[in-house]
Image 1 (cartoon, rainbow, N blue to C red):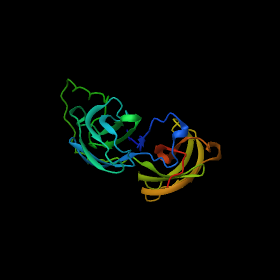
Image 2 (image 1 turned 180 degrees about the horizontal axis):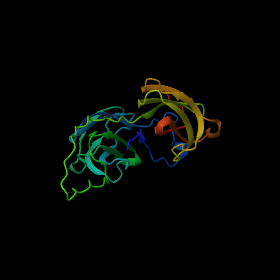
Image 3 (image 1 turned 30 degrees about the vertical axis):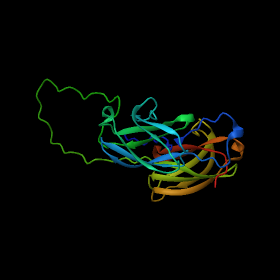
Image 4 (image 1 turned 90 degrees about the vertical axis):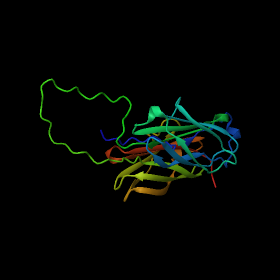
Length: 248
């Protein structure tokens, strides 16, 4: 089956600070995220962070695809030091070697967390794959076969780069399929913007990476957090969320 599911990235994609008082949310608040920079199949994954909080202890975990790394296998710990952007590499644990796609998660003190996923082995296995059928009892002459070429599936995703409160949100998309019509929707937090309010439409053109700004629907203004989603022809989709606070 062709897999076109996008986990959001976090930007799935994304770090959600546990904020217990709306009054404590700064207008300058930034959402820490991390990006996959490189993968050494069954060995390690390299990441680069952005907008991380300072002096926070993090535990790094990996797990099966689509689990967001929740209750995953611990692969490392670190302190964010001065925060902001920095690079790191983490080893892939033995139980996940051979997997096609792996979730990775960073959990920090104070309620911070971020998760993403990466392609480990394009020809690798998926959890819960049924066993191959047994060999028939009667002998049969096998048909000639050829080894298929590896197929690398790039999952489109997008991160939030700027917000103008109650007005617009700016995003950066990566790995988008070419010449695909998308509808941008926004909705309440935790809904993934499914059946959300239309904000814009676009065609991905040559695909790959792009930047764009979309208006926040009037019905969602004054909400603290907003989900944003892109639904494309052929089953493609990606989603994320943002704080409805102006950023620099």
